[in-house]
Length: 338
Image (cartoon, rainbow, N blue to C red):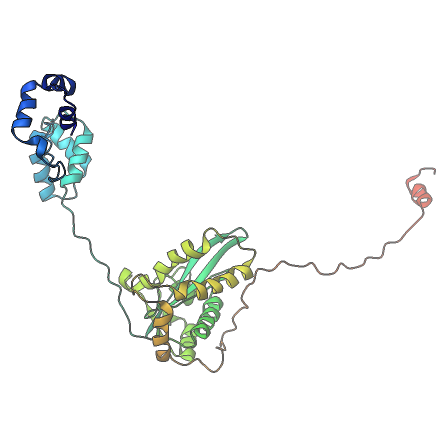
C-alpha cells in the first residue's frame, strides 16, 4: 500500500527504495510481478513454523520418554537425576517442562450419578458451619430424584436432632421417601462415637423410628461419589450461595433465612445435572412419596429436649435482710471514740 501511494505521488523508484529500506531491484520486481495490483486482503496471512531451538536436553529426551512409557508416574525430580547421571548438564526447569508435556495422561473417569426412581431415596448428612456465637451443624436432606432440599441448623449432632429434624423434613416434603441413605452420620445414630463402622440397625431406637415413618435405613458402604454426591455437592452449594457473605443475628434468624433461601433459590433453580427446575421434578415425585405418619414418633427411650441457644435471664434476686446499726455502735466495737 505504501509503495502504491508513493508511485501515485510521482516519487522516483530509487527514492522509494531508500525510503522503505529495500533495494531498487526489489521495487522493480514488485512492479513487474503485479504485486501492486493484488488485493492485500484476498489471502490469509501465513506464518512459517518457528524453527526448533536446540537445547541441552535433546540427547536425553529419548531416555525420559522410555522411562515414562514404562513408569508413567515417575517424578520430574527422579528423571532429572537419571538424565544428569547420563551426562545432562542443563537445569531442572527444562526437564520439568518436558516431563509435563510428554507424560502419559490417564483418561479421566466420568462420574455419572446413580439416579433413583421418584420417591425411592433421600440422602442425609451433616455439614459444619462456624458463626460468631459458635459452631452449628446443618442437617441436610435431599430427595434423590428431584434434588429437592431441606436443611436446618442445630447446635449439636445428636439422636434427638436427627429424629426431630427428619420429621420436620418429611413435613416439608409432604411425604416420606422409601429409603434414607446415610454415611458419616452412622456414629451419631448408633450412639457410639468410637464406632464409625457400626451398622445403623444396631440402634433399636432409630430402627423403631424408621418403622414408625415407613422408610428403610441404608448405609453408604463403601463410599462412592456416584451414590453419595447428591447430598455432598449441595453442601458446597449451601456454603457458596447461602452462607458466605451474609451476617446472621441468631439461630432463629439463620434458620428463617435458610427456609426463605430454599423456597426462593435452591428449590426453584435449574439443576446443573438434571437440566430441569427442581420444583418441576418434585411435582412429578410428590405422588410417589409414602404418606406421613399420623403422629410424631414417641420414643421408648426418653430423648432429651433439643438444645436451643437462648440468652439465659437470671432469676429474681432474693431479698436478704441486713441488720442496721448506728456508726457510734461500730466505733465502740472497734475501740474507737466517735
